[in-house]
Structure formats: structure tokens, C-alpha cells
Image (cartoon, rainbow, N blue to C red; front, side, top):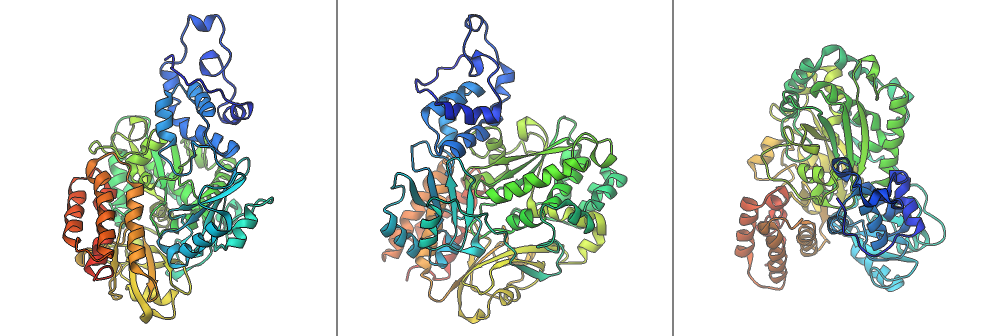
Length: 596
């Protein structure tokens, strides 16, 4: 189509940034100089519209190289991809890590979410304001508050964005460290989280020994499962996964085998396998650890899944706040291709499969699977109405298998050891082990692997020496619930019985000195900010919930109103964000953690 573009013109640097991703323009309709022929013949059509999925990577190219997305730069992206400017602007403004207003080329995003709040993030932000001025101020360097960065075990944490340089994460940080990092020298590479423990160690057994080294992975039974899966055949692989009883580890706990079987039986082609690595639930950082410390396990599992369901292409959608992790995955993918584990003839199987990485840009809602698919297609990350479900109508309208990182990491173990060995760990209904992210006011924050069915008290004892001083625990992240009973069994059936959820595996601990009113208020603000705004119950309800909570902390009695708002959001919202936006707030009120 012939677009009505803006008058703003791109700079040479902006053109170079976009062309570095998309290649030079091929004609006048896609960014080149128009010729006489271009005035009479329109080019593009469907082939141009098929490039829409490159919108997010193109916006990232501008953001990374220039430091913001200018009208001229966006204009050039719209011309290259045949995207109307209004739609591109709607996408760019949807994501927190993109800026459509000019700002300093060096930015420090300071986490002030629940785990960092317990570690003194509020005081840190006050000190930054005194030392550097308000959020967003400064010509060359600035700072701003951020929701959870997925570094809860290193709280308080920061994410640095530098125009023309590589993004970096760091923690724990001080005002002096932030100012130094925003100075002349780029900060060094972020450290991989190695605070892990528990038993039995299956998912975490390679932490600290493998990383993106394929030889080390192969020496630790790496790719043995893929070889075995190829010999077994698709149907037997799906039967083994189903027999294991593996439930999804992203929060919804849907049976993994059933999901695989649903995609495998679809006749449409092509099919896709997508790894949901948009780990944005506050208090959660287990997927980051797995991708940093054992990336080939995720890649191998995706390859097994592709062979099982009949897919030839896969994507890893990773949250934008994980720049070092993305680079680790990129290196691992290169190594896997070089060794023949990805590509036209996977491990000599005569099957084709390869994987691309798509980087999110700061939107909690994109952890919802259909919102993630919308984002990957170059749109705003707004959840789709279901049905149809992704197994029928997923990425690009094709059958799509979506699993999160931890779910996939279990697959090689199930194939290598068998379903019976997997079921021997855990409970009858909650099989296997589970990764729990312990953070907050504890002595040893980190990722702990425990058999499902272990008590919360046992987990806490691994991470802190003073269990008796705990005031409350947020179980399952911001979408979870506050609990004070330390003898809860960490299994899905036991959690459901007492009205709580394991969710994403987040366990945030708050000591006696933490002001819980501030913590609950931060959760309410989080959901207000992160609602995509598509449906009225969530868009309006999250705002009204925060307002009512503010009145409660000032002495009013609006508890009944919050309960009513929560019920409406849970019953009428399109997706899980609205369904769970009141869970933590309501549980805090029920336990008397907020209000009189």
C-alpha cells in the first residue's frame, strides 16, 4: 500500500541502524529513492505485509543505536516494513523499554518492585533523586524506576541502556555504583546467578559447569535425549511426556503432554514451537538462571518438541530486561547449528528445525501466551480472545506449541530417564521437582530445586537462618497470594486446597521491619501500570483497586469495594492478568497485613 507517512526525515545514523537489521532497501517503495517506474507500479502487497513481524526488532535497532525512537526513525521503519505510522507508534508506546521522546543516551532502570523494595529500593531511589535529580532529568545520563528486572536474588538491581552500546544488568547496586556506571566507561558484563541449591538436583545439576560450551554439555549427557527421541518417533515421545504427568511450570500448570498432542494432531502446516522466556512475574528469576547456566537444555528440548509435533521453526521470546541471557542463547544457537543439532538435517534425522530469538521490550502482559504471539507478529501485546487456542491458530495463524523455559528443561530428563523415574519424584498429582525463586529478607537468596510436595518451611530453612522473624511471604509473585502459614505443602493440589497458588515459583519473604502497606501498594500500582487496557474490567478495575487501597491505608474502610472489584476482574477480564490482579491485595487484607 502507499502509506501516508510523517514529514519527519531519518538521519543517516537511523537509516544505518535499520538497514543493519533489514538490509539495504530494494526499491523506492521500501526506503530507496523512487524512480519513474515507482510512480506507476506499486510493489510489496502481501510480501510486504509478511514483514510486519520484524517491527519489534527494527524498533530495537533504533533504540539500541540511537537511544530513542524519533519520528524520523519511525517513519523510515514504517516505509521499510509497509506499516502505517499510527500502528507503529501504538506498538512503540506499548513497551516500557522503548522511548518515543528524546532522552539521555545513558539510562539506569532501577527496580523498585517487591523484592527490591524489601532490600531498600525506596531509599536508593530517594538518594538518586538527591544526587542526580528527578527521574528522566539529565542530558547525558538519567535514571528511572522500573518494575521487576528478574534479578531478585541480587536486589536492589538495575538495568543499564546505552545508546550505541550493549545493555547490561547489575546488582546489588548503590548510588555510587550507578553514577560510576553512567559515567564514561561502560559497566562490565553482568554476573550469572549461581545461587542455587536444593534436592534432587536435576534441572540445576549443570549450573556453574556448562554455560554456552557445547563440549561441556555433551560431556554431561547433552543431546542424548534428542538422539533417543529421534529413535523413538513422535508418537512415543508424546506418550512419554504425557505419562510423566509434567504440568506447565509457567503458572497455569496445564498438562504438557496434552498440549503437545493437540498441536501434533493439527493438519495445517507450517507449525511452530515457541519458548516463552518472558519471565516478568515479580519475584521470579528461575528461567533466567536456566538459560544462563544451561542454555543447550532448552534448545535440545525445543528440538525434541519440534520433532514430536512436526514443526520446522522455533522462536525463543525472551524478556527485554535479559540482555546478557539473550547473548548467551545466541552463542549457544550458533554452536548448536555448527554441530548439526539445528538446521536442515538435525542430528542426522533428515528433519529440519531451527530457532530464532525475539526480544521483548518491557511488557508484563506479554507473558500471557497469546499476547506474546501478538508481540512477535509486530503488534501491541494484547491478549487474544480464546478459542481458538494457539494449538489451532497460533503464531501467524498456524498451529503453535508454547512452553515456558522450566517446562522445556524437564523434557530431556523425561526422555533419558523415562516417565516412571520422573513420577517417582513429587506427589501423585504434582510430579517431578520444581524450581522456587527465594528472595526478599533472606540470608541466601537464589533458585532452589525441590521435589513437589516439600513444605514451605523446608524451603525457607534452606535460605534463611531466622524463619521465626518472617512477617509474611508472597507466594507465586504479584499474581499470587500472601501467606503466613509456613507449613503449606508446595504441590498444586495442596495449594489449591488452601486457596493459594504456586504460580511462577516466586517466594518473596518479608521480615518484621518491612512496611507491608508499601509492598501491597506497589503490587496494586504494578497491575495498574501493566494492564494492557484492552478490556474494561481490568483497565478500570486495576485503577479503582489502587485508589481504594490508598484510602484503606489512610483509615477508610473500602475492603468490601476491593473485594467487589476483584470479583468483577476475575470473572470478566479477557486474560489471566485481570483474573489475578486482586489476588495478592485481597489476601493481604484477609491476613490483616494492611489496614486496621
